[in-house]
Length: 211
Length: 181
Image 1: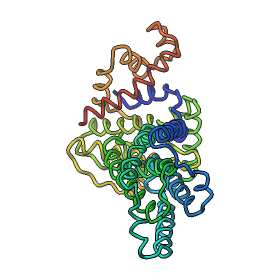
Image 2: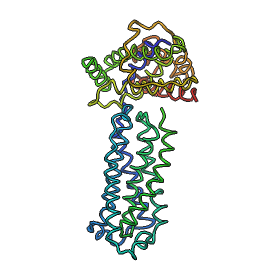
Image 3: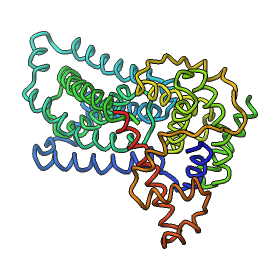
């Protein structure tokens, strides 16, 4: 086949393909809604949810996880473009990580020495470390589904961005249940759960985001 | 150079809005540049082998054209696709290739004339499509038939031909991928 013949066939195909970002929001929102409903049906929301949102220290868990999700989603969308690897800016991620670290340091300093261990260990480590990855499955899956239509030239990095975005959002969902008060708890264990999901997503991305 | 880039941007923007003529113009302009690059890098593949790679890149450009951000220049986008696919194609043929991006900028359309080479791979892939898809791609590509003519010949509506062609081209890429692995 001559290339000119191929070009004729390609040019005849004018059916438009939806933009990646449009598809992304279309599937991510239902995925998060289902995750939230699943959490409500199984663990339930924390009884003092309204007060928790009113308390700045507690509110930061939604601010941090939400910021992580939004920043990572933005990065994932840039990386979905073939030239994205060259133009992507990763520093906003460092900003979120820095804020989380600042929160952790602040909590460490302001918590009396004898209370630190209890505040860090809390009562729900395993619930947290299991629930966040489980709640991540749908949002991460939705992001993979949408971004497979993209054309990343850095599949492993794109997978990692998807993992951060999906598990960040899942952690924000989980926070509506989480009764632990201290940033010593939530920064430590949320981060660990998010990192686990990110590593797995990166490995998945390296396999399924090739084109 | 900047002027050329703007032209490409206009053509591709019109193409993504559904203008088949602008799209053909864009692809015809991009092909010699891609060919120049592939030949400069992969002379050992022979002319037909190089043309196989060029066609793989063209198909990828086609299937990923919606990933071009209209506010960004076309060339870096096009080169990134080409680079990714060329590396992929050489890897599939058992050759490692190091492809610095600068090479893409320096490459000039080495063969500005019409391409005389027949490439074999794409025809093989088209032969692996289901019967009706194969006929549609052949009629429109090789015979230059219009949608309406193809529809008439196959007793399909024009819209159905459009959808079938769209799917067939996607399938070609999947077949190609499987063929490589």
